[in-house]
Length: 320
Image 1 (spheres, helix red, strand yellow):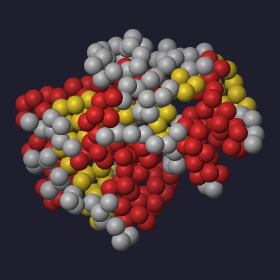
Image 2 (cartoon, rainbow, N blue to C red):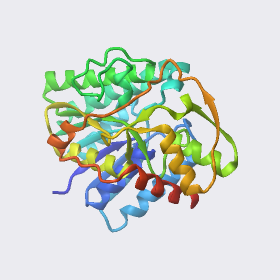
Image 3 (cartoon, rainbow, N blue to C red):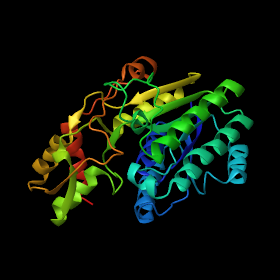
């Protein structure tokens, strides 16, 4: 059945792919994004052009430039559109960057989420999906990371702000019966990756013969998930009101950063110029998602291997 959906952060890497996916299946999608300067807004406008192209003869698409911290704007959008569900992806991201401006991170990630939850509650939205991060697990959680972990020792303001938003989602479920699914994203990569992502930094370094910083000689494990797999997981969460749940969305297969870099070198045919550095205090040596809950509740089955995903990413990158 066709739905009317709000996607926040719709001009970003993940948001634009999600909007495309929902449009291709025939949904009506309203995308909201403030096109901030966290990275070049031109890249975000290019993402929106891709969504607009996908919208032709598929679903209905409307883009609104605005801020989730504007409750009057949200009230108008919710009132005019009668959303069936919200996929809330808008956020300030980046563990290291959050140390420089923690106030901004909390204003966007917590206060912005509060405004959206209020609008969803007041307008009787059927389901609210909140994007979160594997960074909330910190450095003390058992491996693999399970959704039952306390996640009460965040290593930087960014994961602290996202963990606070997760708990706020539970409060709105408990008090008002709002269905809220928290989706904890692991290391997402693919076409349209943010320029500050490791995949883009290494690809830029190779193509421009620039040096790239690599922590611990790449001897860290990350749970890489290709964008198409992640989007299918988010869409499944949008379609299934589950009360309140926290669900990991990773591949469930940690891979060394050094091996990920080696795959990029293989497909580029050139070596990256790597600068070795110590692992910062706000980072962790291993991220590994337990995805049994996602399999059970969302029928989530990641299909794209890291080897295939990196090849697809490089093909996109070299054509930019």
